[in-house]
Structure formats: C-alpha cells, structure tokens
Length: 161
Ligand code: PNS
Image 1 (tube, rainbow, N blue to C red):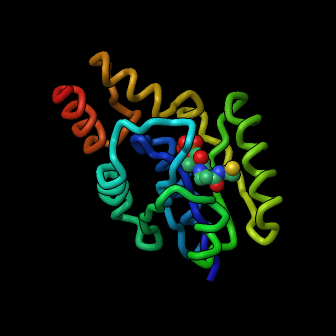
Image 2 (tube, rainbow, N blue to C red):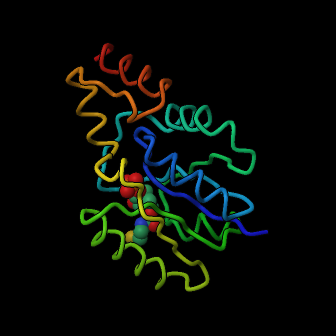
C-alpha cells in the first residue's frame, strides 16, 4: 500500500491543486491531502472551512482523504500516517527555489520519505491561492480557477468582511 501526502495551505483549494491531487491519486494507492500550517502565511479561511471545501471537491476520488494537523513538521505528519511520499505541484520559475529548499530540508529530516514533484499543467501554471483571494476581494471572475463551491465561499467571505 503506497500512501502519499499532498500538503499545502489550500487557502482556498484551486483547480491547480485539484489537478495535482487527481494525478497523484492515479499513481498512489492512497492520497492524504493535508492542510498544514505555513508559518509564513496568515490564512483567510480557518482549517474547518478549508477542510470542508477540500472534502467537497475530492468526494469523487475514492482513494483520497482530507486531514489536517496542529502546527508541526510535514515529515512527522507523513510518518504518523504511514506515508512513503510527499507529492507537490511545481509551477514554472516561481516555485522552484522554495520547493527545492523545502524538499532538501525534508530529506535531511527524514530520508525515508521521498518528495515527488508533478509539473503543473500549462493552464494552471500562473494560478495560486493568493491570486484567487486577490481576485475575489476585488470582485474579479473566478471561472475556471476554482470549483463553484469555492467561488461561492469566497464571495460569501468577502461579502461578510
Ligand atoms: O501551500 P503552501 O503554503 O505552499 O504549503 C506549505 C506547507 C504547508 C506544505 C509548508 O509550509 C509545510 O510543510 N509546513 C509544515 C512545517 C514544515 O514541515 N516545514 C518544513 C521544514 S522547516
């Protein structure tokens, strides 16, 4: 049984994330989408809201589950869950330096957990949660960037603000 972790902030999940999750689910027996704390970011959605959106968006994938963790190391979370792999999406240019650094640190921390990078699909190569939040905050179109349920939650979030 090969288990992979797809970690991230998912604030909120985008179509780019979902493409990576789907592709990981074709390769691994079980994929755990893990909402973890990124100490560099202050989230817009709380963990419960992000979990709810991710569960709704992955409900058609039987070997995918959604989990979250209190602040802690990704490799410790992966070990606790019995995962052998970490799968991350890699967009051209902007992701490389940071992801390379994280991959190296995670390898130093636990050499038994392998990091795999999936190249982001061309149509999602410019997409990020932060651009989606910015667009939503300014009333821009979100079609094809996030699933309808996420668009709805974003509209609601900014209407409440
Ligand atoms: O979607 P993001 O914000 O790029 O995801 C980053 C995330 C949450 C995967 C990363 O910050 C992370 O792994 N957080 C857990 C803490 C950790 O293990 N950091 C790496 C070693 S310092």
